[in-house]
Image 1 (cartoon, rainbow, N blue to C red):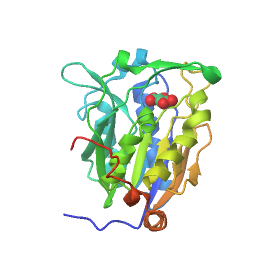
Image 2 (image 1 turned 90 degrees about the vertical axis):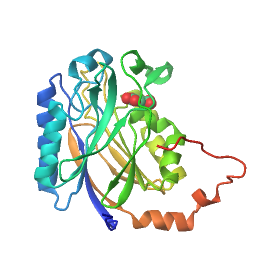
Image 3 (image 1 turned 120 degrees about the vertical axis):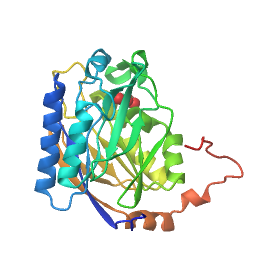
Image 4 (image 1 turned 60 degrees about the vertical axis):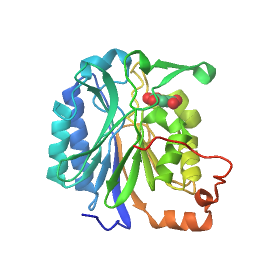
Length: 287
Ligand SMILES: O=C(O)CCC(=O)C(=O)O
């Protein structure tokens, strides 16, 4: 049954803190979700950060891994979506498959508590940057990359899903735009150094180039952690305007996706249809 697309979708981005205890993290995320729905009436979509139930570090990933959707975290998330009648882009968890392979995986849930999508991070975070304080990370030492893009329909609107480092790859965002997505959501965990340089800039670039909303949702900053998350969960519209930005600490921010702005942007600046596809193109496998 097709749903009439909503004009405006009310959303909450929960910038939760993450500690070294899976069950505490899940309880914390669930109470943030409950508070968000209680605080602002009409919230229909909630988003959580990357690895919201596990400290971000390759040494933690196997210990915190769970099967999807039968694991503890997924079962709790499914239940809360049903209870609160919401969609949830559930940040990410570390998924373990039957072969014991690990993935960084976003699960997406509908108000019936059904899993409507699962995105395994496609571009693993392997960098060794030396400038501005530096950042070295090698997710591929323990994780397996996902092999397909993920689009879900929420209240009649198509959302593309990525995870953190996925935002650096414009082809993925372009593919989502060409497939009709009006928003791309990246649960994320930039460190402070990369965050200061690129967090806002990358979202503005992806949003402007692809005529859509772009959001990144981060965990709260904990300066005593070995990997320090940037915070600043954000949503940008296609004009590049920052519609909402959290601070550094634990916080939930609320934002309306008013989809009329996408139509205005595409009418006034029709770059997607002005592309010279006789000269170049984005090739991708059908998924
Ligand atoms: O691309 C970056 O600089 C940060 C990416 C990241 O932190 C991640 O993928 O978890």
